[in-house]
Length: 256
Image (cartoon, rainbow, N blue to C red; front, side, top):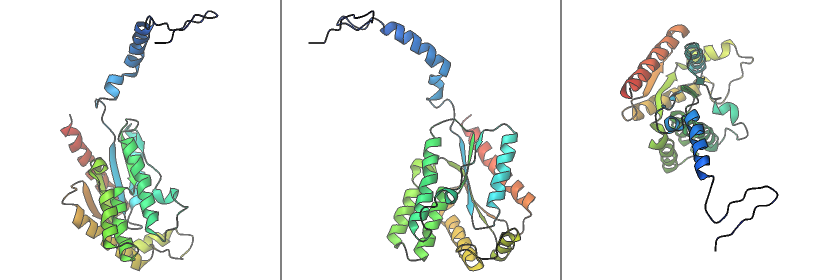
């Protein structure tokens, strides 16, 4: 037996005769939905943001390129998000274990998934994302802290089709170790070298990015390799910006 509610102290309660205010509710809801344009918001009418990943070896021009690209696009009224790099956020995990780069990869992955299901931004520029996480597993394999099987399992996860299809343009930026060190020390507060910011380590990192590009580019045509060794900063930025705009224009043409 359905419960029966009584009218008390001027309050209106639902009775067993139905929902007398349902039509009124639906009329109001329809006006609210119309204002919010829900039928357009959530049916693919508005495209997801363009996603760009820029990564690479130290002092190859990655940060400079991202900064100028962000500035350039915003001046043309694009709504741009430049997420903080994972290495600047994940500081509670030591860089002595693969967990560090797995965690920074997951940090970027969460944003990639969430932002691909909304329209808050037009362009998102990742300072390291899924291709970067893939490449760092090669580093940990070389350090013998991952087995070959573990390396492949983690790499396969970060290259899942569920999110990789959303990365519209990706760039491996590399530079000759000697030139990279000159750039690194030009404005450094100390000449003390880090684990990955010394000539030997940079040379190995460049090799890994080149190998990753060779392995992945046949399947991922959005991936580019840029050697900035002999490029002035303005030319470097112009080259990357032009390539990005061409890639996004081509993508836009497909869906218009």
